[in-house]
Length: 182
Image (tube, rainbow, N blue to C red):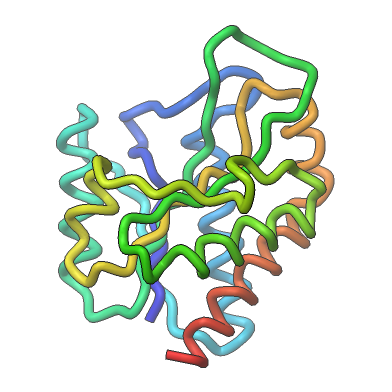
Protein backbone atom coordinates (compact mmCIF):
# COMPACT_ATOMS: atom_id res chain seq x y z
CA UNK A 1 0.00 0.00 0.00
CA UNK A 2 1.05 3.58 -0.68
CA UNK A 3 0.34 6.05 2.11
CA UNK A 4 0.07 9.67 0.93
CA UNK A 5 -0.15 12.69 3.20
CA UNK A 6 -0.30 16.39 2.56
CA UNK A 7 2.80 17.89 4.11
CA UNK A 8 1.36 20.54 6.39
CA UNK A 9 -1.61 20.55 8.69
CA UNK A 10 -4.80 22.53 8.50
CA UNK A 11 -3.51 24.89 11.21
CA UNK A 12 0.21 24.75 10.35
CA UNK A 13 0.91 26.85 7.28
CA UNK A 14 3.45 25.92 4.67
CA UNK A 15 4.77 28.07 1.85
CA UNK A 16 2.43 30.76 0.64
CA UNK A 17 2.72 33.47 -1.97
CA UNK A 18 0.80 33.26 -5.23
CA UNK A 19 -0.80 29.99 -4.12
CA UNK A 20 -1.08 28.30 -0.70
CA UNK A 21 0.87 25.10 0.00
CA UNK A 22 -1.68 23.60 2.41
CA UNK A 23 -4.56 24.01 -0.04
CA UNK A 24 -2.63 22.79 -3.07
CA UNK A 25 -0.89 19.86 -1.31
CA UNK A 26 -4.29 18.58 -0.18
CA UNK A 27 -5.61 18.94 -3.71
CA UNK A 28 -2.67 17.05 -5.26
CA UNK A 29 -2.66 14.32 -2.58
CA UNK A 30 -6.39 13.77 -3.07
CA UNK A 31 -6.15 13.56 -6.84
CA UNK A 32 -3.17 11.17 -6.81
CA UNK A 33 -5.08 9.00 -4.33
CA UNK A 34 -8.12 8.90 -6.65
CA UNK A 35 -5.90 8.05 -9.63
CA UNK A 36 -4.25 5.20 -7.71
CA UNK A 37 -7.68 3.88 -6.71
CA UNK A 38 -8.72 3.91 -10.37
CA UNK A 39 -5.61 1.84 -11.15
CA UNK A 40 -6.56 -0.64 -8.44
CA UNK A 41 -3.57 0.24 -6.27
CA UNK A 42 -4.04 0.10 -2.50
CA UNK A 43 -3.66 3.62 -1.12
CA UNK A 44 -4.44 5.56 2.03
CA UNK A 45 -4.70 9.36 2.24
CA UNK A 46 -4.03 11.45 5.35
CA UNK A 47 -4.52 15.14 6.06
CA UNK A 48 -3.38 16.34 9.49
CA UNK A 49 -6.00 18.65 11.01
CA UNK A 50 -5.27 18.94 14.75
CA UNK A 51 -1.71 20.20 15.36
CA UNK A 52 -1.11 23.86 16.15
CA UNK A 53 2.67 23.94 15.60
CA UNK A 54 5.16 22.46 13.14
CA UNK A 55 6.70 19.93 15.55
CA UNK A 56 3.33 18.43 16.47
CA UNK A 57 2.25 18.50 12.83
CA UNK A 58 5.30 16.54 11.65
CA UNK A 59 5.03 14.10 14.58
CA UNK A 60 1.35 13.42 13.85
CA UNK A 61 2.07 12.79 10.16
CA UNK A 62 4.97 10.46 10.94
CA UNK A 63 2.99 8.60 13.62
CA UNK A 64 0.09 8.13 11.22
CA UNK A 65 2.37 6.68 8.55
CA UNK A 66 4.17 4.42 11.03
CA UNK A 67 0.85 2.99 12.28
CA UNK A 68 0.18 1.36 8.88
CA UNK A 69 1.59 -1.60 7.03
CA UNK A 70 2.61 0.05 3.76
CA UNK A 71 5.22 -0.19 0.99
CA UNK A 72 5.73 3.52 0.26
CA UNK A 73 5.44 6.77 2.23
CA UNK A 74 4.70 9.93 0.22
CA UNK A 75 4.45 13.51 1.48
CA UNK A 76 3.14 16.20 -0.89
CA UNK A 77 4.62 19.70 -0.61
CA UNK A 78 5.14 22.92 -2.51
CA UNK A 79 8.24 25.05 -2.07
CA UNK A 80 9.32 28.70 -2.14
CA UNK A 81 12.56 30.60 -2.60
CA UNK A 82 13.47 33.91 -1.01
CA UNK A 83 12.77 37.12 -2.84
CA UNK A 84 9.02 37.14 -3.33
CA UNK A 85 7.12 36.49 -6.56
CA UNK A 86 9.11 35.68 -9.70
CA UNK A 87 8.14 35.41 -13.31
CA UNK A 88 10.60 32.69 -14.30
CA UNK A 89 10.14 28.99 -13.63
CA UNK A 90 11.98 27.40 -10.70
CA UNK A 91 10.95 23.78 -11.08
CA UNK A 92 10.15 20.54 -9.31
CA UNK A 93 12.12 18.08 -7.21
CA UNK A 94 11.58 14.93 -5.19
CA UNK A 95 13.47 14.44 -1.94
CA UNK A 96 14.60 11.09 -0.57
CA UNK A 97 16.92 9.74 2.16
CA UNK A 98 17.40 6.06 1.32
CA UNK A 99 19.78 5.83 -1.69
CA UNK A 100 17.65 2.94 -3.02
CA UNK A 101 14.79 5.46 -3.45
CA UNK A 102 16.74 7.79 -5.75
CA UNK A 103 15.60 6.14 -8.98
CA UNK A 104 11.94 6.27 -7.91
CA UNK A 105 12.41 9.90 -6.85
CA UNK A 106 13.85 10.67 -10.28
CA UNK A 107 10.97 8.87 -12.02
CA UNK A 108 8.46 10.96 -10.05
CA UNK A 109 10.18 14.25 -10.89
CA UNK A 110 10.51 13.28 -14.53
CA UNK A 111 6.80 12.38 -14.66
CA UNK A 112 5.95 15.83 -13.28
CA UNK A 113 8.19 17.46 -15.87
CA UNK A 114 6.78 15.36 -18.70
CA UNK A 115 3.22 16.25 -17.71
CA UNK A 116 3.76 19.94 -17.04
CA UNK A 117 6.96 21.27 -18.57
CA UNK A 118 8.28 22.25 -15.13
CA UNK A 119 12.08 22.43 -14.85
CA UNK A 120 13.88 19.49 -13.24
CA UNK A 121 15.90 20.95 -10.38
CA UNK A 122 19.34 19.59 -9.45
CA UNK A 123 19.82 17.72 -12.72
CA UNK A 124 17.48 14.76 -12.41
CA UNK A 125 14.94 16.44 -10.13
CA UNK A 126 16.07 14.66 -6.96
CA UNK A 127 17.67 15.76 -3.72
CA UNK A 128 19.14 13.46 -1.08
CA UNK A 129 18.18 14.81 2.36
CA UNK A 130 19.00 13.21 5.70
CA UNK A 131 17.72 15.98 7.95
CA UNK A 132 13.95 15.99 7.40
CA UNK A 133 11.74 14.24 9.94
CA UNK A 134 9.39 12.69 7.41
CA UNK A 135 12.27 11.11 5.49
CA UNK A 136 14.25 10.02 8.56
CA UNK A 137 11.54 8.89 10.97
CA UNK A 138 9.03 7.00 8.86
CA UNK A 139 9.99 3.47 9.78
CA UNK A 140 9.99 1.54 6.51
CA UNK A 141 12.84 3.59 4.99
CA UNK A 142 10.88 4.05 1.73
CA UNK A 143 9.82 7.68 1.84
CA UNK A 144 9.57 10.41 -0.79
CA UNK A 145 8.82 14.07 -0.26
CA UNK A 146 7.52 15.70 -3.44
CA UNK A 147 8.07 19.43 -3.97
CA UNK A 148 5.55 19.83 -6.79
CA UNK A 149 6.50 23.39 -7.75
CA UNK A 150 7.31 26.79 -6.25
CA UNK A 151 4.50 28.92 -4.85
CA UNK A 152 6.28 32.15 -5.79
CA UNK A 153 6.97 31.34 -9.45
CA UNK A 154 4.31 32.56 -11.85
CA UNK A 155 5.56 30.18 -14.55
CA UNK A 156 5.56 27.15 -12.21
CA UNK A 157 2.02 27.92 -11.10
CA UNK A 158 0.81 28.44 -14.67
CA UNK A 159 2.23 25.06 -15.74
CA UNK A 160 0.95 23.33 -12.60
CA UNK A 161 -2.61 24.62 -13.00
CA UNK A 162 -2.75 23.98 -16.74
CA UNK A 163 -1.55 20.39 -16.39
CA UNK A 164 -2.87 19.43 -12.94
CA UNK A 165 -4.92 16.36 -13.91
CA UNK A 166 -2.31 14.92 -16.25
CA UNK A 167 0.45 15.49 -13.68
CA UNK A 168 -1.46 13.68 -10.92
CA UNK A 169 -2.28 10.79 -13.25
CA UNK A 170 1.36 10.43 -14.29
CA UNK A 171 2.60 10.50 -10.67
CA UNK A 172 0.03 7.84 -9.79
CA UNK A 173 1.23 5.73 -12.72
CA UNK A 174 4.81 5.89 -11.42
CA UNK A 175 3.68 4.73 -7.96
CA UNK A 176 1.46 2.02 -9.46
CA UNK A 177 4.32 0.68 -11.61
CA UNK A 178 6.72 0.76 -8.66
CA UNK A 179 4.27 -1.25 -6.54
CA UNK A 180 3.90 -3.80 -9.33
CA UNK A 181 7.66 -4.38 -9.29
CA UNK A 182 8.04 -4.64 -5.49
